[in-house]
Image (spheres, helix red, strand yellow):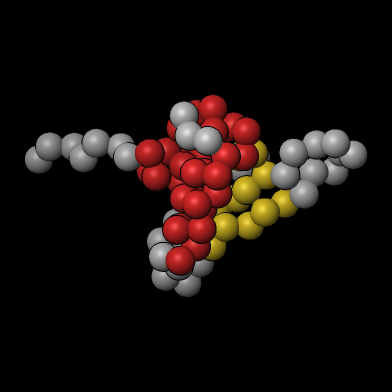
Length: 76
């Protein structure tokens, strides 16, 4: 059976699954999208029932990170 090509949304999910999560900047750089497009993709995932948590940085001028959290639907 042929392996399915990894989509950009699959890449976003993989970055969000990492223990450190992913900053908006890291998502933009990896996927090649503008910040507004990444935010729209995150909103789209939320509408599909994926739980995404935004965590503020501990550092005064640090970046927030986004994390994919386990949810009831099994989709992660």
